Length: 171
Image 1 (tube, one colour):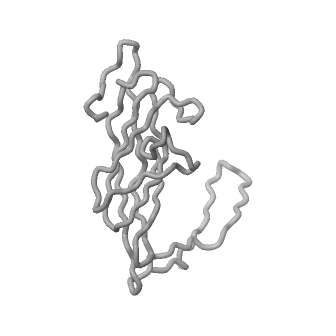
Image 2 (cartoon, rainbow, N blue to C red):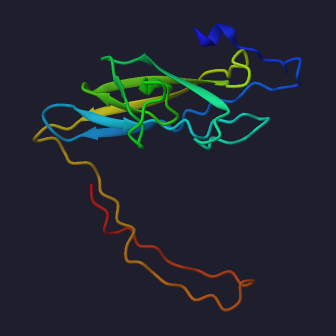
Image 3 (cartoon, one colour):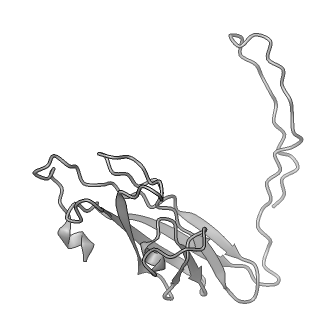
C-alpha cells in the first residue's frame, strides 16, 4: 500500500514529497430506470514541488487511484485520451470510472515521484454522489442566466455595472 510508504520529510537529495489533488466532489444525475454513468476523475492538478508539471510528455509523477467506498465496485476505464497508463485505468492521471449503482462513492489519489518512488504524497479524497431519477421523479432544476450581454468599457478605472437576470431558471 502506497500510504504506508509515505515520506513526509525531504529526502537526502533535498526533494519534497509530491502533493496529490483529486479534484472537486461532485453529484451526477442518472436520468433513466437503470444507472450506468461514466464519471471523469481529475488528478492533473497534483504537483511535484521540485518540478511542477503534469505534462504527459514530461512525467514527474505516477498516479494511483482507488475506490475507498461505495455501494458497488466501479470499473476504471481509459482516460479522456483513450489511453491506459501501463494497461491500468487507475494509474492514469485523469481516469474515467463506470458506475452502475446509485449512491455515494469515495475515491483516493496518491502520487509518487518517478525519480524517487519512496517520495509519496498523502492521499487526497473526493466524493461522487450518483442520484438516480426515475420516471415520475421531479426533473433537476435548470439554471438560465439570461441573455448574453456585451459591455463597452471606455475607462477601466471606473467600475461598471451589469445586471444579470436569472428569472428564466426553473425547478
